[in-house]
Each structure stands twice: as structure tokens, then as C-alpha cells.
Length: 237
Length: 243
Image 1 (tube, each protein chain N blue to C red):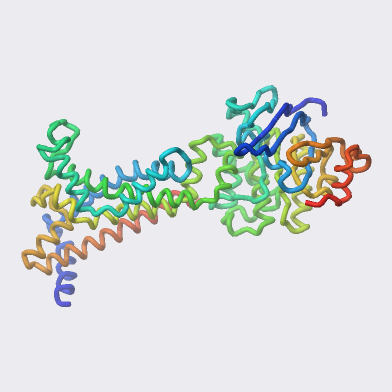
Image 2 (cartoon, rainbow over the protein chains, first blue to last red):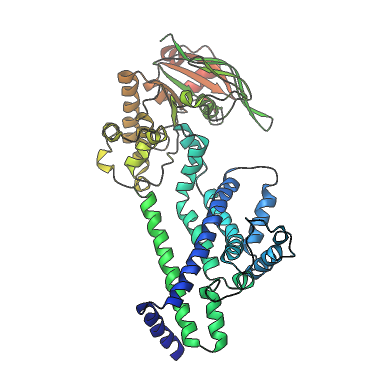
């Protein structure tokens, strides 16, 4: 209990004194997870909408793969990305400018995008399928194009779509295995909040680890509040 | 009432080999109210969906103001936007009443239309509820929003698919009155699908009976109700048709 209280006090202290190391870790965590979330939203929301709105050959297989992806252990994703990007791996060996190197923030973005996009797509699909099917016909009858119809359905499913993005964010901001593998927890380069917590705990610095944990929780809370606020601002009329 | 808005020829619609609709010939004239009556499952709503170009026919054509709608020949968007439907169940967007009514105009890029929206809301008696969430309305109010949403577009043709089913007499009267005044004041062509013969009698200039996907009789109101030529029409009008 003492560690928790000390952690809380220490967290407040670090924030008040604007500890540079802490701010670097927080900024990197937000930058990596934020970028990964952008990618996974850009891929996951359209894919979820497509799966929810249309029927095509192979759809069931794609859905089954998606559900598998939703439950995929992040550390396995990390291992997969590690093997792909390592110098002897199929992508790493290419040495192409667009392929990120291991132990860089870009490699962590790749891993986190792979972890979160099935969640974004899967929850979006469920949300879209939950919209009254008659709505599409009604919107078409009012003169909507195919894209306007899709947008109308997504707008109606907005709560579910926002939840999908929040779930995607939650799965990566708190993730440690994959970023540890592909990022390496290098101080000043790839050290994230979660990897720093693991490191400080191992070193016995429980109050610092706890303070980082408190900051991680607070950050997650603030991002979710911001998303919910955005949801209201975007769609309420 | 001589100019044809629709010319339907040899129109069929089948789902998984099962033929739902088989209309050899049907003309809808500009400025008329045409009522299509018939029992449930007769193909009335299917015909309406085809008249709104929402799904392609299996065979045959629908000529709308000289533009042909046929299998593999979709109706161009500007033409499709000259027709709209009010369905039996008003599916409203989870937004305000005002936003729902404005929606069709937004689709057309006409965002600056608040006066028009409020004017139509006034016509259906819902201007005071403009800011209310549409999903909090009663069934009758929701259907009036649905009607306002269609009216605001000033369509050439308004398709009404059982618009008053399950509504109370007050709202039935109100919606019928709005439809009648739209037809008289603005010359809007209306195709009304209903299984309520009394409603057809109150509103329509011409009435058609659909049975098992086919139009068995189509005549002016007086003839249809007083001197039907087909015994099935006579039975339907007398309420003797079991369905």
C-alpha cells in the first residue's frame, strides 16, 4: 500500500517538476501508439464497414481471421515483426527505405498497428451490423450515393465505431511484450511507459514504476475522455 | 393527366428463382395519385422499390421521364433523386428532427436550407420539435418527420409504402391531408401502396389491385370501387378476400 501512495505522490511530483525523462517517455508512448492507432483506424474502420455491409465470397474466412487477430497474443505479433524486420528476415534483408529497422519507434508502430487493427475492424463490423438494415434502403431512397450510404451507416454506428477505436488504443497503450521485442527499451530512443514500468520494477524502484503506472492510467483516461468528447462534437446536432 | 411519368413494361422481379412481381404494363401519369392495393405479399412494396430504382428488375424496363431503368442499366443519380419513398416504418437517423429533415438536402450539397426545412416542419406540425432527438418521437410524429424528409426534396414522384399502417386515426388523417395537399398544391405525383381500401378510396384518382405479383385490375377510382370488371377486385373491395 505504501508503494501505491508513494507512487501517486511521486507521479504528481514528476509532473509538477516537468521531469524531462518522464516527458520523453510519455511523448514517445503517445507518438508511437497514436501513429499506430491512426494506421489501424485507417485500415480497420473501412475493412469493418466492408465486412459489415457487404457479402462476398471468402467473407467468412476474412471474419474468422479477424476474430483470430482480435485474440492474438501481442508478444507473438512482436516476435513475428521481429523476425520479419531483422536483418536476416524477409523484409529486413531488403534494406528498403520504407521498411523500418528493428529497435526504432517505426518498428514499434508496425507491431502496434498489427495488434490493434483487428480490434478496430472487428468492433466496427459488429457496430455496423447492429444498425437497422432498413436504414440503408431509406437513405438510398433519399438520394444517397453508395459512399453516402456507407457514411450514414457508420454515423449511426458511431458509438460502436468510437468504442472500436478506444479498444484499439487500449490494446496498444498498455501493451508491453511486442514493443519490448521490436523496440528493445533503449533509453532515449524506444523506451515507452510500459517498458519503463517493467524495467523499474525489475530494478526494485517500485515507487517510480508505480508513478509511471499512474501516469499511464491517467493518460489512457484522458485520451478516452477526449475521444468521447470528439464523438459528441462530431455527430451531435 | 396524360403525360406518363413512368412507363413500366414487362417488369419482373425474382428472388432466388421465386418470382415476386410480374407487371406486364403500367403507366403512372403526372400529377395523379395512384393507389396500389392488395393483400400482404402481393408484391406492392417490391414494385415500389423498383419505382424508386432501389434494386434492379430481373427482366423488363421502367421508363422514368424518358430514361430507362433495366437490368444492368441503373438509373442515373440525378434522375434517381427526383423520386423518394416514405416507408411503413420510419427509420430515422439518430439526430435531431431538424437534421433528419435536412438530411436529403445535405446529400445534394444544399446545406443552406434552414428556411425550407422549417417551412416543411411547419407544414407537418412539428416545427416546435425541430431540436428534439428524432428517436424520442411517437410513431405518428416519426412518420410525419419521414414525410417531411421526403417533402423537403420537392420530388417529382413521392412513393408512399403503407405510410399510415399502425398509426392512430389522428395521424392517419393528418398524413392523408398532407399527401392530398402536396398533390393538389404542388402537383406531386404520388404512388400509394396500401392494403387499406378505404384509404385508397379517400385519396386516389386511380386504383390498381395487385395479386400474386400481377396487376389484375387498374381503373379510375369510381370504376374500381363501383363497377370492377374482375371478380377478384369485387371480392377485395367487399372485404371478402381472405389473406
